[in-house]
Image 1 (cartoon, rainbow, N blue to C red):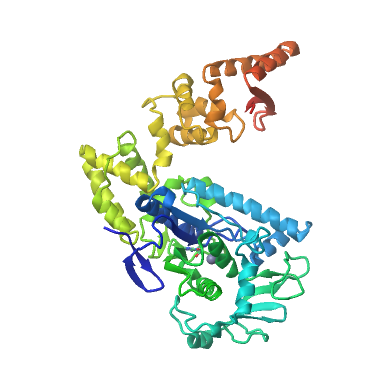
Image 2 (cartoon, rainbow, N blue to C red):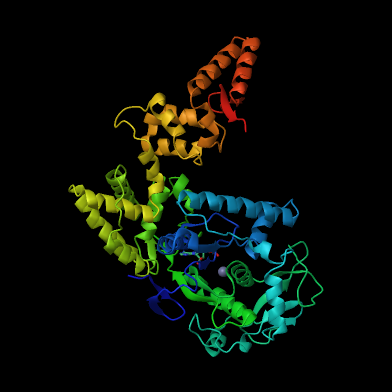
Length: 537
Ligand code: AMP
Ligand code: ZN
């Protein structure tokens, strides 16, 4: 069966035909970085990650280009920066807010097991590109030149009346929209639905030299950024454009207007896909209702349901509802999916992988990402596997790998641990040396902590003594004498306690020859000095 996708533009499900099967191109509107991402924001990230995985499976991992942007210029960002850093110049404050939020976003979605997109452009890098190529300013100038935009009071506005089929995506005629418009219409607009491509900046706000002969510096409107980033990275017409359903109008409608009128094309993207909305325990998520919940809180605190949730469980819960349906995010669903995740992990972690995918599973996914049907099939396989059907177990494993779930389980697969009792360093550490060099020791520590709790205390303590970010590859040179590392470090601490500084310096030098720099830090809780390890590069 071939991949079928529902297209908001045609309101139909149709076979997906890529423009170039050697380079399938997808753009998804990313986060505005001013605050923690909430679990609603996670939905498009998770849904389009699944589509990215499926496209890579169908067309080959090197034949899919996925762009998900970061919106780092926005009124909400400016307001947050002014509130949080009142003493800093606004531009410095903005940089602090956007950088911290972007880092947090990456931490959150890494924990959800998302593949990184091929490109993750920041809007501010595409306002004016010194290196040339399409950018917001060049698109705006083209639109002014070809009569689709006009300058008024230092703004540039898109002239909606200049585009006969404006409104096709959201399926509304211009007359209907104008009748329903509740926006207060600025006097300089020709038509009430005309939207801003460029506007003057207030004093102190971020500002760039304006296009179209405007003398005062300004900044872009919201919609133009996605036209510029998709045009620059994917070309004037590409395959799939995605985002949440709320973006259909005005954001996507206006992206289409800008891109098509600048490029002279009949479409911007062939397929437009929109995920449904998420609500929490039956209510719209809102700060005032107190049910506003961030990805970070779900992963790292017990605010929702009294426990921290593994990233895989959040993702599993999200995917069990079809992406176009609304989803109700509840504690009871998380509990159920947590149990399911643990039981399936136990069932498949030590299996081989089937050579072929289960057909019914794949067909369900290829039918517009019908994940509820796909999981229904996987539960049949699970039941068969529990009854001793080895092929069913192997197919289950292959399916969960395609869905991207093997990452947290993968650790278990690489290191077989004793079924009961505390984990011993000599059993485990040598095996960590053999694993994927790119994985950080922190990730291993987290894995052991999560999977084995107090039984893994000594393993976790060992791994955590290396400085943050140390990879398996970095410690490989210690493969044959890692036990010395512990002994010598302990001896040195003893020597220091005896005030035998000659001996402690001798040991420090010996470790330095092994490539290890020591750092003494006082434990905040116990007041004891502890020594951590830094691997020399
Ligand atoms: P924003 O940062 O508000 O621009 O939103 C980023 C993405 O999250 C967009 O694709 C939105 O459509 C999506 N989104 C925001 N809130 C929700 C929600 N409650 N449910 C599903 N998607 C959402
Ligand atoms: Zn966008």
